[in-house]
Amino acid sequence: MYFQNPVFIPGPTNMPECLRKAIDMPSLDHRSSLFGEILHPALEGVKQVLKSETAEIFVFPSTGTGGWETALTNTLSAGDKVLAARNGMFSQRWIDMCQRHGLDVQVVESPWGEGLPTDRYEEILTADTAHQIKVVLATHNETATGVVSDIAAVRNALDAANHPALLYVDGVSSIGSMDFRMDEWGVDIAIAGSQKGFMLPVGLAIVGFSPKTMGMLDSATLPRTFFDIRDMAKGYANNAYPYTPAVGLLNGLKMATEMLLSEGLENVFDRHHRIASGVRAAVKAWGLDLCAVSPDLYSDTVSAICTPDGFNATDIATHAADKYDVAFGVGLGDVAGKAFRIGHLGSLTDVMALSGIATAEMCMVDLGLDIQLGVGVAAAQELYRA
Ligand SMILES: *Cc1c(COP(=O)(O)O)cnc(C)c1O
Image (cartoon, rainbow, N blue to C red; front, side, top):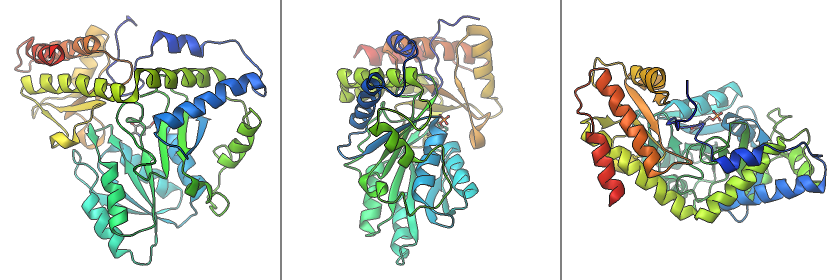
């Protein structure tokens, strides 16, 4: 078993050496101005990555899932109505969390492989003249199907319906890798995690709250203690946490945002787009289809690739791990066994992507798929050369 190969799962992503070193630090007093010199730049860096002037940033020792819970429990009360679409495993899990918290979720069933149904959202919001819907949930990038949705279009649906509902966006697999505009899109809560676009180990939930949602904290009655952002805000004001912070990870987060901002967010997005385009060129050369049904939905952070009927797509990930020590993502939920996933986000170059494409190709040939070695690699090489 070798640890030298890059991973091609859509999180956790590859960690740059400098971030691994930034995390590895001596213990320090987490109620000191020294801690403040780590915490506050990390929060400011996240705010810039979210493209927000006004958001308040909170970082918990948790994961993206804890970010969902932070959003719901700080702003809502049992029985509140929420509108959400189910178009993949992650949107499904967030819906499930809402239901377990006693929220009244209006679920719009959407085919897996399609984006958020903004036209349906607009119809439903327009029909809700009593304004019972409090929040619209949107999964920006459905990691299970490799589908990116148009958050500006969700905002337009809300505005066209003249509806005051808030917009909460799961950007766990998009933020820091694909364009995300919290203020411009009128996003009220944005949610990320440390182990995807931020290129860190798992361990942090990262959330941005708009001024409007900061005004809802005292009226929301869902139980919360660990995730109460009022306690967190009080802690931050004193260079501290309500409990013990993950200081090393926060130092990593500070440096990760510096890396993203010094590369330039637009350059980061262009790099992801180019790498993803190479993967898509390879998929086309293999004669396979993406799970995402149309090019406007193609995710620049993960590709879910459908394999022919009768073939178990999970075998590709198993074989890649066993024979080549390379990790690919398996299909989840409705597409389990029907698709495998190549994650192409975070710390990745064209050359690293070529190794993943070449490995996927070897696996598919080993497992008897009718694909000629080298065709996918060649298609990606042409794209990366151009
Ligand atoms: C990974 C992911 C999550 C869950 O994050 P965890 O850190 O595993 O809790 C939620 N939403 C999306 C879109 C994801 O890709």
